[in-house]
Image (tube, rainbow, N blue to C red; front, top):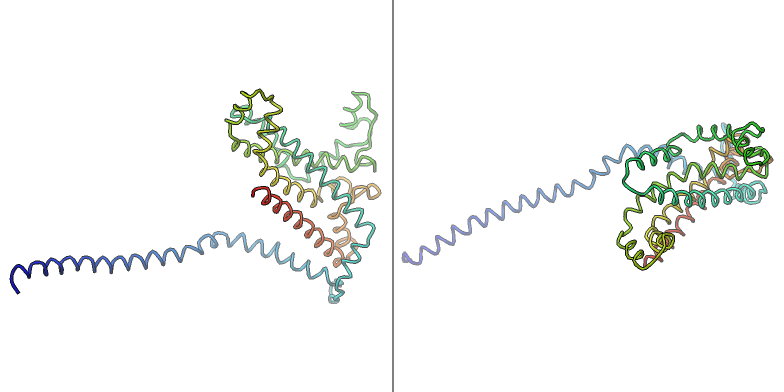
Length: 323
């Protein structure tokens, strides 16, 4: 081999050595990267594990137990007896359960419409970046963070049926007679509804305030140039821009209304004369007061199914509108 032929061979060998080393190094780095990526999938689950364990023990296992109990005649210390769908038949054929279900629907609809309407109005009034508005928002949000037991006790005091009660004193200033409020079967449901709206509206207000930041401000200017009034700008610009927020809040408020228990239990306990009996208070009485745990579990399962169906229907409607 001549000198001229040997030089290219040396150069080729010298060039192939770094490439081979690069391939070996790249292969090692690739394996390390793949191993790191393959190990990342469990990292989020590691952080979620404590909460998931708590949910499993205190929520999902009791839910599975309630589903099993709904098909049994529960006999503590004597062994449960399988009765199939008898508990569900008892619940569905019960006149008290049908009345409680109707009261629950009325209360859920009233609280949902009232809290969303009032929350939307408050959000429009408190939209802005002023420091004073921040203080007012915090003050308006207080009913949400106050424990529901405290809220119920405060409203029970304000609903005192005598003429010198707080709200009756206000009614007396405008010439209206004293009302029984939660002690009157004709006004007890409306009184509980007002309490639920008062507590739920600030939560809806904060969600609406977050949604208002995503509405394009240019649309307001264009509508104003076209001569639209403030009411028209709200109806044709703000409301369509908050359509997804409305659907989410509707589901949350409806579930909150269907699962209402604490305020009813503390204010009226289903009275007077069963005028405010809802599904949750009836389940409580069947399960813990009358010791009919199987029938109470069947009612709880039916309430869960109704809530699940409502959520699925709303989600399907949202998807259909988005297409």
